[in-house]
Length: 130
Image (tube, rainbow, N blue to C red):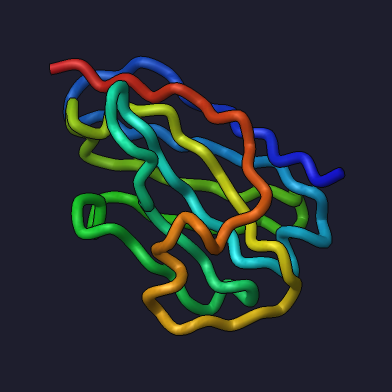
């Protein structure tokens, strides 16, 4: 059973920074596509960012491009999402996710699709107040 465990959420002010983390089994972090999604109250879960299995490519939703950065620390078996210049509209539960098959490469559009991801964490709440 693959477990992804998010942490690091919290309540911050507009313009602040926050880093959320996702603890993963080592083989998942090193061999799988990893992504971050978020879900605000009453809204669909939406794509935020993804990293190809090798870590060589990163993808971002337009709404977070230039403000958020996805990264991996293989020594700590942890995926990160560094969030800067936070806005109230970033308020959501943030989920990390991984695809099912190891060492797979996809066309760019697939990385943005929720259906690509098979393993999911339980989420961590991020609240940004104005």
